[in-house]
Image (cartoon, rainbow, N blue to C red):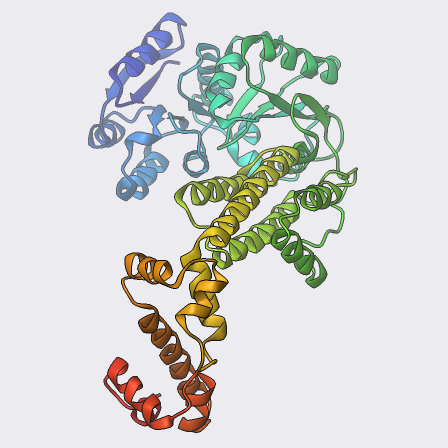
Length: 486
């Protein structure tokens, strides 16, 4: 019995290529229909009733998805989904329409042939041409995410590249690799799953051979988490366990094959203790690079199995970043270069693939931060203006404080210091001193119930009336009126 098929794809080249492959492999397909947009696709479904559909998911607008999904359920028997984006959203859409497979572009002829053979086999499996339950539906995307409790006895590989940009190259390599027994290939956002349908002789050696040939094919690094087969676990249970096993690469790195493991995560406190916070404050204030390096190596470079959950380590590292941010704000280390470096380190802490590399980069950032801190401190020490203002703030309560005393402190002549203050600050020494005293007086008026005379004395004025006159000149209100409006 021959069947009809509709291929829906916005890309004419892709569409014609699929139809050419169908024609050349002599599938029992009587009529091939094309659709280049959503309305055309739905029209073909309603009027031609093809038994098999091959649909590019990216073609369907979000606001049309529910309507298209219902049409597929009403009119189609066998569904094959395609996408240029191997994302969880596309995988979920494929699940919703019970797709036999989700093809990820660029398309593999061998995978296309295998899936089309499966679709036709499903249609003819009961001998009448009526669709029965797909014989391999348990090996669709739904099997990865929904536990059907059915034991699966063959090998499953979970593949992950250290750099996600290598994933398209890995998919291309999979199409070329000689598996002998061709697996089903499932792509998720950051990994690829290979599910085998028959016995794989010595899966561990086979996985190592796959990795060796990949390294010849690409400069990228790869890790494989391997379930060798046998056992009572379902595909979903195996996939969940492999994802957990793959997380061990956070500690051990890539370029390795990991056997699936049920070992639980080790307990780990993800937050800095009060004592550790004090240690960090002291190390940063002293700009002690050696102490920082020793602390980081001690806390992050001595892990052995069983490992703590990687998320706990990332939380601990963000706690350190919070200490660094407070230090940066306190020391005014907020230049554009430092800020950019901080953001890149923050992103790496959240998304970095390997702990050792994250920690090394974080240490380098801390070194640069401490270098900036020391440079900043040296500039403050040699800058007579900063030094003079700091001295004025520290000694403003002394009613005898004068230009000569401050000039002596900064090792400049009174005339030159007066010139510098006018040039750099736009104010005379007396104006700066008055600003400091009135600012301090405002704080005391707002936050204490001390008398006006007492506050005047505390900020460097012996006479309360004179203090009130100066206060009003600066603020346009009296101390008493200012306090009433607090």
